Amino acid sequence: AQSVTQLDSHVSVSEGTPVLLRCNYSSSYSPSLFWYVQHPNKGLQLLLKYTSAATLVKGINGFEAEFKKSETSFHLTKPSAHMSDAAEYFCVVSLRSNDYKLSFGAGTTVTVRA
Amino acid sequence: GAGVSQTPSNKVTEKGKYVELRCDPISGHTALYWYRQSLGQGPEFLIYFQGTGAADDSGLPNDRFFAVRPEGSVSTLKIQRTERGDSAVYLCASSDGQRETQYFGPGTRLLVL
Image 1 (tube, rainbow over the protein chains, first blue to last red):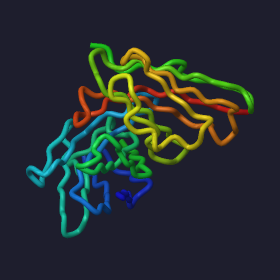
Image 2: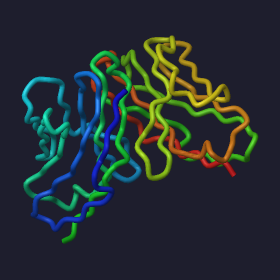
Image 3: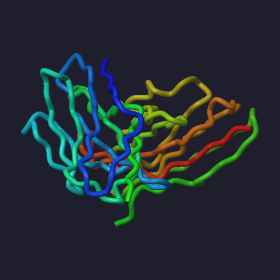
Image 4: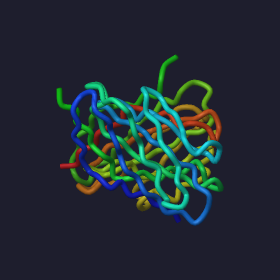
């Protein structure tokens, strides 16, 4: 079985400062890992995904995440937050052998202060 | 092109009633998924269709829940004898094959009174 733990339920940053959203996973097998973002009243949107190629994954809107197998982590970062980054972020894992079944973390709410 | 659409966007019903939630996937996508998102939680997998058949329904919580996709496109999630605990946002996603990116709809917010 696989599971995801998002270490922060809420993160507040000032506009222009870095954003760090922490995610740890557990999986018996080689996982695929994703970050999705959910803006109010909109569908979930894929930010980026890791599927065993480069461990540093670049996504949309300036986000990137690093897969660290030794730490079982997949933290999401952005060097400079924008007001439009305020949203709910989900770390997601799936098994390579069962890759249609996404397992979501509980989510991290990001607020951006002007 | 158009994304995944879901109707209705909101549904309020009374305990014990029957409800149907509809999902229109992206045109041409063969795979379709249903998830349920309870308040303050991440979405949880319910069922996966490949074409017309349910390839994995292991996430359906009990036999009150049923989903169909008769022509391999539109899907309907059906809930019988609704309970207050069924209140949640029901999300639909589709992808162009099993291993491809899942594109999510905006969800149907179900409230059972």
